Length: 353
Image (tube, helix red, strand yellow):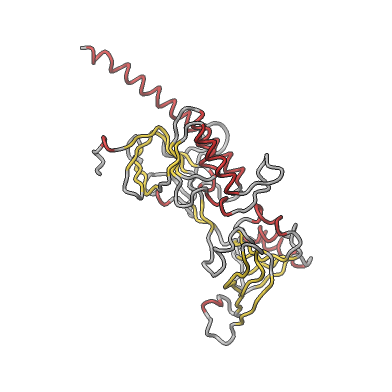
């Protein structure tokens, strides 16, 4: 299909990439504004929340709700107001002209007058045995989301940056003890977090396991995490020194494992659009005061949720940004309609001749 095959290209007033909390909230608001949004679910339908067995901190659910149930409820709500949801993945977005030309990994092409990027950020994982099977059953990528479920248990946090330090510090509210596991001697975190964690080490709330890596997570979905296998080498990076006699291997009992090794924003498909991103790939939006806070520097292209937010990364903040993006997109589309009507009025006398 070529760019000129206009008759074969499906057009939509608004396309939303991503079906997590941000994307579905945007879809609910956009559908209620009669913008008939098309939601493309992406490679992780429902987003990271589908990996969370229980969500206890989303307002309105005093008894909690499972991540998949919350997502499915929001999807049904969006559909009730007129949103269309398809299991498709965006390959690229051409913003060189309007409408936007969106190529899908299936090879299909669609166009849109406005586009909301709500494709989230994928938590980095270790790729070790037990990690996938126990994700949501004692393995987590969000201490704020899941820490309270493991109250009074010993917990392991893996990582050496700000996120790992912050999560380890946060988990001391619930854990009998937190073990911070880092594969090197030195940390990448800011001095503020290192100092704060060291204070908690002195208080006996945190213990740091340097030059150590987790190589396997043991347990079951029914009973959760029972223990992990670790390796340690005095010079760090022990997984690269498995044959070294100085590398020590041992089992370690724990009730939960928190991965805090960063996130990768899902923005590769926006390369070439001209949308600004930071060094890590997060979309940069207008933010600040007033309207159009979710707008990028590409007119008609908006960002919401973890694709923008590298700090809070909570369901409720993603939902709030999804709402903002839908309202910003609606304002943009209304202005576009006014411009098109003005052009038609100018052209109308010429067509009468």
